[in-house]
Image (tube, rainbow, N blue to C red; front, side, top):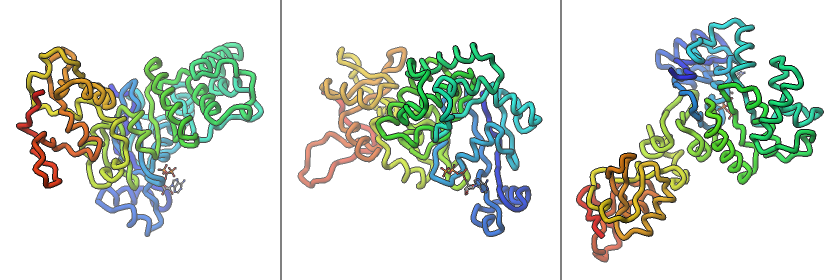
Length: 367
Ligand SMILES: Nc1ncnc2c1ncn2[C@@H]1O[C@H](COP(=O)(O)OP(=O)(O)OP(=O)(O)O)[C@@H](O)[C@H]1O
């Protein structure tokens, strides 16, 4: 069972929201509704998030990400549709039941840290537990543990303004982790940080996630961040989810021109793995000679390294060490340049200045 499911969620602000949803169902668009004084913030959003997954919602400002997130934790009531958390319909709970679920099972990490300036780092990290009514000694112990997880051991007695932005965000993360909530909702949590610190926090989140296995919904407007963090990524535009898939799916098979335009600036070398780059129809004897090989999940950068060391196309193996495809060096270069799936044939130059391109078959990959 999925941990979290959004089923045909709509949120309309302004006049006659129910009538607006009906019109949207019948094909009206956002602009038509706006003319009538209604704002369709989220339109027919459906997705599932499995336990232990990082699900990223990516979109430009105003695309509806925050509204969607606030419906997921029950802070905003959907105009239509359901939010199922462990099979329980949040939209059907009483306000008291909802508060209980929010306090115990769901944690939020915001963009602007939301720390209390007159509380110590430890007290800030313990805040979620305080709301739950956990006794002081226990909450301080759990908060100190969470601070340790986020690399802040030793800072417990400091004040928030003594910490850098990245450290303050770690306190926010520790606060979310201290509650033992299964579901973390992260709203642009790293967007206010400098690029280097931001990357550091992304690494740290991935590392923590590999140990803690939370279910995370992460909102961002940065596609590189989305691709880096997301097991699955939903791309939003004008209130609608226009594509959901793995980072590779979105990069390799964008659903429309809008997504394709977005992905142009993505650093492909950080996203692609051998399975996306290989040609599955080209199989030779590349795995038989004892040279280094790659696996389906070998990262692009590592694949380049292997390719530089072997004198022929790189063999890609599955977990049972069976050959599932090969990656000719030219193909690597092509993917880095423009993501072009076509294999540029390794044929003698004809002096025309144009690369010969095949349709993907019959390219010699022999050494
Ligand atoms: N309380 C509200 N009342 C009226 N309109 C709202 C309200 N909250 C959001 N909206 C509108 O809904 C649309 C989606 O807003 P939302 O904040 O969800 O987008 P976003 O993708 O999170 O943007 P950002 O990244 O700038 O926060 C916007 O047009 C916004 O103006």
